[in-house]
Length: 97
Ligand SMILES: [Zn+2]
Image (tube, rainbow, N blue to C red; front, side, top):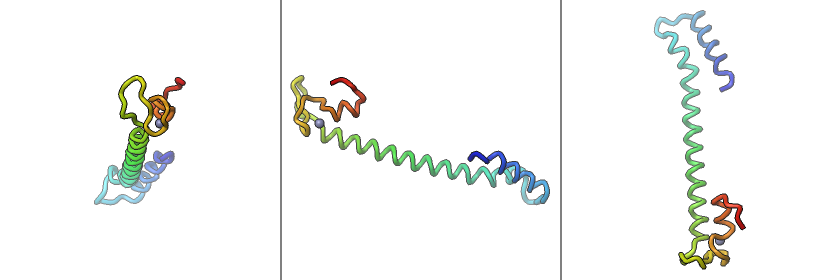
């Protein structure tokens, strides 16, 4: 998209040199901007799916590293260390040992 301004300028220059009675300046601009917007929406869609996949993966890890015991003496069902285990602390961003 870095050259978008240049491509719009080129489209406007071309429209000025070759006027089309069935098109206006907006058509010239949208001929450049429209595909750019569609491409951005596609990227947003891919990013959204990637975020949803990552969220689901974290939920699966949390499920694996859960504890059936909600007391202070709970242990991670997977690691068998005091809960929250290092995996859960890492996901939560805790640096506490
Ligand atoms: Zn664990």
